[in-house]
Image (cartoon, rainbow, N blue to C red; front, side):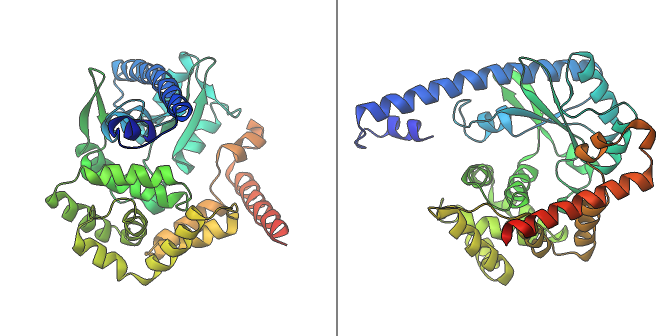
Length: 337
């Protein structure tokens, strides 16, 4: 993005060696992204030929649709969203072409993971890693049910190939929530949200806010709006900014996040701090309970990889997950001291 900005504005005085570095980086990123985009199109064709619809998230589709140029956004893997009912079939299809789970998961463990989590990371040699999702975000961050999300999805052009992605309203909410899911720790996620919001019309802005309020996700969007406003003054409608500023907890979290983003020495955020912040951001008691239940009892890839197949039954899985949760918390507390 810096290379493109400097290239467009000849009044910016940039030393030749810096221009050369920026141009080289841009060309390298463009080349890598084109290879990854080719892999995405290949996977989409394979899955859709088997009758599995796919929504492409982030990665190539974000670079193309949000930033306008395939080389304007860096990414290192591919994120594919399928319907939950198609998750097992999609995993088998990917395994048949060489993609296997990064952690050792047997066929017996896959259905357990699908029930408990929202994604599986698979990889093959000499090709990009794929994060296969069967939900766009964790259930406590969800703003829409699966059927509505798919019904509102749209087709975008990706180098002459039609790719399904989230609708404009859902895309804006998704990137705002993704920034909050990771604690507003990185500038690129805020830029993704900013670019997604730039595509909205006046009516779609109203839809975004109304949908977030109905789903009890307004506080997360408000924090993201407060952090985006200095990056793109005037982008967010005045009425939406006024509502964001009137949300006290949003102001407090946004202020702390801004200090971390702009600080010269950004210290890593502790696990317990991440959890506490998410609990504050979530407005509905049921969502808070879902978050705690997932952290304590619902097994992920690492939990299942620990257990042999013959021990993969529910009480043992819950004990392993609970033990790992307490271990993470205890280690976090030790580092804090």
